[in-house]
Length: 298
Image (tube, rainbow, N blue to C red):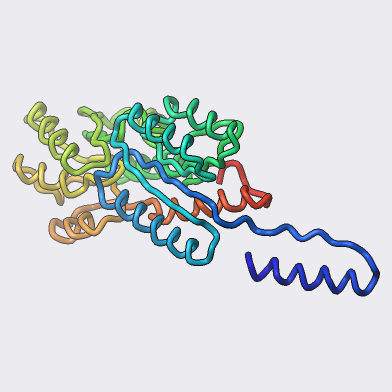
């Protein structure tokens, strides 16, 4: 960006000298204050996103683009996150990036921030609004591919568990709707039970053990889950005397999942979200702050 602006300035001066005209060069804003509001931080992906955000901001601070940056994690409590966001608003941040605990609950406070002139970009669990920007993956495609792969892999019939993400989140709602839509086309695929794993190994472990204990006589052929519970699911199967190699699974590209796939010869379908989403969200915010064209929903 800086190189581009310097080039524009030189060309503008040349035009003035050549034809006596005028040119306006838009200067890049500097010294910006940037805050990130994360919800829970219970898995490696969340930790990586924060680290990438901090490294990217540190580099931008060295360049003078930003003067201050801050990241916080509010947990699964939407009210805690609202309180943190209100503190960010009162402290005069120019940019706020958000991974929402509950998209609907957070929408009013984020719109309030935008109304006060703060550039707000939500990523991963997005919050949509007239003055809000979002960035993420194609959640419908993500979930639809998982469900279609499972149904086709099982030949259109079998027993499966559905392990959802974080209750109330944008991503989980979209993904569950897509799962349900695909399963409607496969009447011989039976959902034994479902529950919220929270994209967290500990929560998924407890849930999976409870579900298996409640259905001891039901054969399990597959588990559709959104991510970050892969090892916990595998360990639960082993604890209940089930060979993981006989159960098809979906999940994200975690090192742990690859390890158990290899160890137990699991038939798996793997997708994932890039850890650099907060950095990409900051790029969107910087474009908006500097008056460039930016997509509302990337």
